[in-house]
Length: 393
View 1 (cartoon, rainbow, N blue to C red):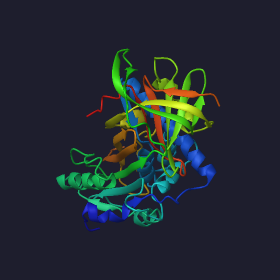
View 2: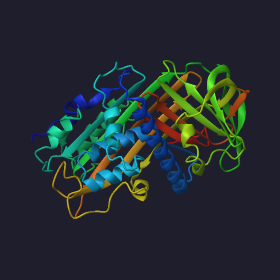
View 3: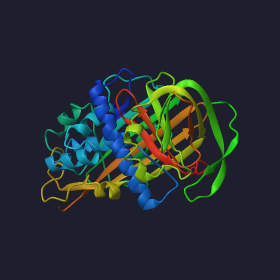
View 4: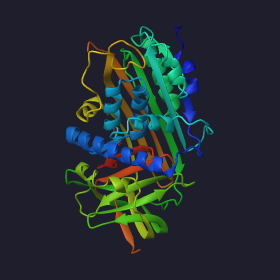
């Protein structure tokens, strides 16, 4: 199979999410439950491992990249990926996430949400005869590239930059090597349905280490929002213009903030469940974050990658012995009085292997957030913010 330039070969794989694209309510609810569970698990494990003040992950781009890889995985691999991504025994779950990120009808380039998926095979990998037709059935046109060469870095980074509308210019620092790289990316930009006050006076914010800093605290009051609260937490589901997307913000009533271990109990909150319209008041700091890491160690602990087998790990693509090696993810978000910008990209890299009251939501300590597509159930981004002034690298 001849080589092709990645940006040209993957042009057909850069797809914007059409506002009309959605599954039925049951499908989107199941998707959101899986994505919220995945977000809680990733954030909790990452926090325990790194102890970072701020953490952000993108369940949607991760599910897309791993869902694409799972198309060629063995039965054991498909089951492991499905369980790890929060779909339990629903082996087709990752495929539904992939399809949600590859809609049939593209939207305008300036749509609030754009999504993209792609797969790049090494030019030395011998593909099985049905691989290309199988991928075509999912509207995926693969590219063939020398993954050991420096050009692959330039091409894959160029694709990610284009797919995230310039927000994430680099995902790879060196040639990935291995058998293939599957990619998932998204870009989001939207204004709030109800904008916060223009002036954001400074207010105290308690960081996870107990110290206090002064941060610009945005303020919104009125009866146009939906809230949920109990004895431990208060939350608001903030709608964006057009109402196809929303962001849940969960704050703790105590000064200790929201912890990673709280997120599993807050899964239904992150999904936007049981929120009711009420008169409320919201205090939320502006924040921006650039985050990124190799998720493979955490995913291994979650059981995503099956034990290395003697047989091919991805027989739907090749008979050669290859296995998951790295899952690189980079994310960014910017939240201010006007709205939100966010982007994420995930690269799954393989290796050749031998084997009604006034509700106050005051986010004045570490708080959780979850940005979701209310139609498909994809969780575009989720995280914990413990230091709004720390933007990351």
